[in-house]
Image (cartoon, rainbow, N blue to C red; front, side, top):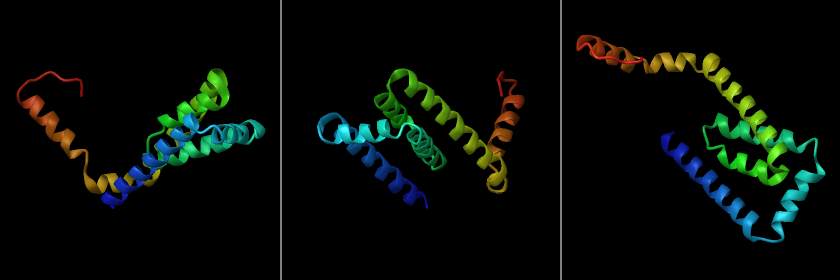
Length: 130
């Protein structure tokens, strides 16, 4: 499954590169792409939020989405839509991790590392902010 995640991330990276290449160089694609979002002013922010939510749940980079928001709606509205989508996706991933992945995290015992680290810090009287 680790190789599948790497392949999925590489595919999305490739798609982002192609999208930005088309937006910056292709004179036919850019008006078509931007006009879709301009013509659907009420529905396009919802699509935008869903795309960012999908990417964040899969732990894929969302910063290209932020740049797209600025390209599509300008600085002010793009900033508001981007912040709203970031908040919604962050809350969603937190809830998914807190309630649905809690047992998986306990099974893998990832907190054992921090316990060992605190033991070493206390043993040698080091100072830390853990």
